[in-house]
Image (cartoon, one colour):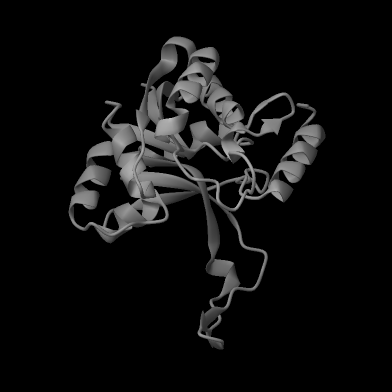
Length: 223
């Protein structure tokens, strides 16, 4: 049975510079439209809710209707924090499991989405992860205080698929914010599976990321 999805698109794009990164042109269509199209093409996804800033709701609704058609579950306003926006999205959908995806990850593929949904069904959730290629240092002030073993580290991607009621219950335990949904579930002691993602499933944060996204699309033959 298909699961619902929530596309998080309520950020301020402060590191992108001028304009909103979600509406930036990526080979003829806005960045977020690529994310919506991938979800629409995934066999595991049923309906999709978009969570956006108040000033972009009308624009996002238009893009949602054009890309998703009847699969659009609604467009709702996000909050000041990521967890607030995710919660608003989860309250707008109804499926047991929900795929939460960053609108600024335009190169996710339907196959990755389907794989993550399938793995989540075995636990309380699952997320896409990628290898960490840089050596990571823990720094306090200007002093290195730790060097985690790189082989055990993974970089979180999206979608992150969660059991809807488990996420909401975990959120009720604390008002603290989390940078991703796996952290929210882990805080409640719930099991989250890791699914190997794709290095090309990048997040558009800065203008340089848009250049890289265009190059990756050209390599895929999707330009």
